[in-house]
Length: 137
Image 1 (cartoon, helix red, strand yellow):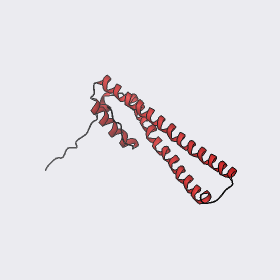
Image 2 (spheres, rainbow, N blue to C red):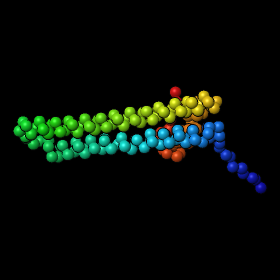
Image 3 (cartoon, rainbow, N blue to C red):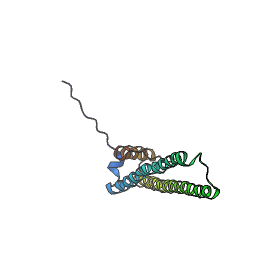
Image 4 (cartoon, one colour):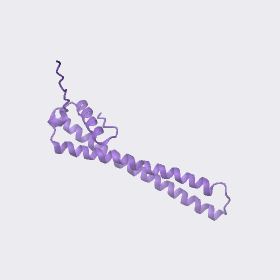
């Protein structure tokens, strides 16, 4: 009879880094990944806005004052959507930057290569929270 042994894969980052420090980085990563869902909402609203404009406003004639009011309202809506996307992008980039800085600190403090930290953290984070992982440079 042949015996089969289970091959366990142990992550160096899990073994060497304190759980609290790793949990902190994973929490920030999960918040960053959750932002991707919220970024889709303004783009959906922009599509709905174009649809409403084309169905109810485009192709009809209005007097000058009504036209200016409609134009002002539409430009305001677009500006609000653009600002909201920019704010969300800034928040997501700052969270990603914070995770990268924490991972670089982990690499220096615990003597683990950056590539190993990147690969193992990304594997763990994607498994737990989805997303695309982290790329350290």
